Length: 398
Ligand SMILES: Cc1cc2nc3c(=O)[nH]c(=O)nc-3n(C[C@H](O)[C@H](O)[C@H](O)COP(=O)(O)OP(=O)(O)OC[C@H]3O[C@@H](n4cnc5c(N)ncnc54)[C@H](O)[C@@H]3O)c2cc1C
Image 1 (tube, rainbow, N blue to C red):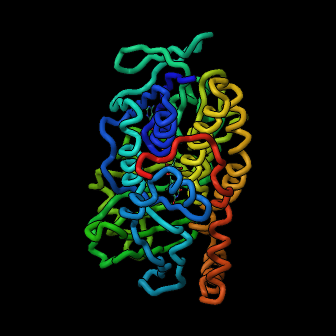
Image 2 (tube, rainbow, N blue to C red):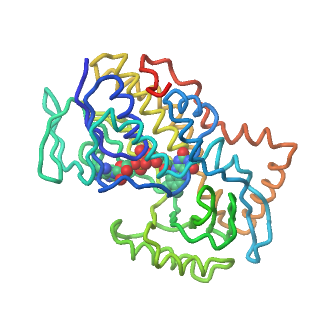
Image 3 (cartoon, helix red, strand yellow):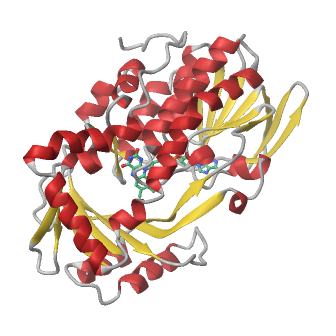
């Protein structure tokens, strides 16, 4: 049975789901609030372990490899730039790493013939009726769909409209993250540098694009009051928390003032008892955001595959499909959320003692003798088994 399905969000989960649903013959529309798809760049995301099989199954692995960052090991340095320890590339960059914007573009390219994409619009109202879901859009139009899926990220509008206000489901981990691109005047060549002070993390890395480096800041803080559209306010929060920090921080804070592409958010998790109600479901960060280290990208793509697969098996019984999708995904999500809850403490330990212990542990773990064990440990949460054998069409490119 074919259905009309609206997906909110053209990030990672949305286009992945559009791809599979379109290949199954459903009429798919994707609405994305940004006026254009971001061309490239942004924070890097990685895949490892069993996630590679899903990329192969979807037919995107070759494209992802062609755009890999090729990021190597990253050095933790002191204020003079002297190396304290090394984080092996597998820790942050997995088996293949790609800039999030490049991945979003690849997923869009693979799905654009399977779905209608609408950019620069968003859902403003959702009303479920017995025969379908009535949706109103910010541009003033209305339409009815058989199903609506919210793949619109941590601050999901679909979740807010149907399940309730974000603060009921969001728990903040006590850290904030900021990143933006800077000219690569640091001589970085497929590598990164990390500098810590208690509760603070500053990083610089450059991979695929030798002209640019990404500057990253993570800091421990009480909840900050700010407007998510007010970029100047976000820049001053970062500047305030890193004022007086050592290493190259002052120079990076100066660059921050002119950065046109600042990403700033809390490290937060989303927890809901159910990821669907009636004809509306959630996918990816909208449903289960875990934060850095929580396999958010791989899980958004696996969730898309699983939801499409269960809809195919249930042949129109969307309630059954939503239930089975949730049963299939929950165990991996819970493991990843548990792991990612410690990401802030790992990246920006609270005391000099904790920083020293972390660096010492990594000196041991990244030694040649233990590198196999290290690779296994860092892939543990990504290993969710081979993708289930759903009756989904083979990739068009296979
Ligand atoms: C600092 C940081 C580092 C990370 N590093 C990694 C990593 O190394 N590896 C990894 O696997 N994951 C990483 N993640 C997580 C990863 O980026 C996300 O889990 C992943 O992008 C989730 O995909 P998604 O499609 O659910 O949401 P998103 O990628 O956030 O996409 C949501 C989309 O919805 C759009 N949207 C938002 N609101 C609306 C609306 N109202 N209407 C229409 N569209 C809307 C947005 O513009 C966006 O295009 C990291 C996250 C952060 C914050």
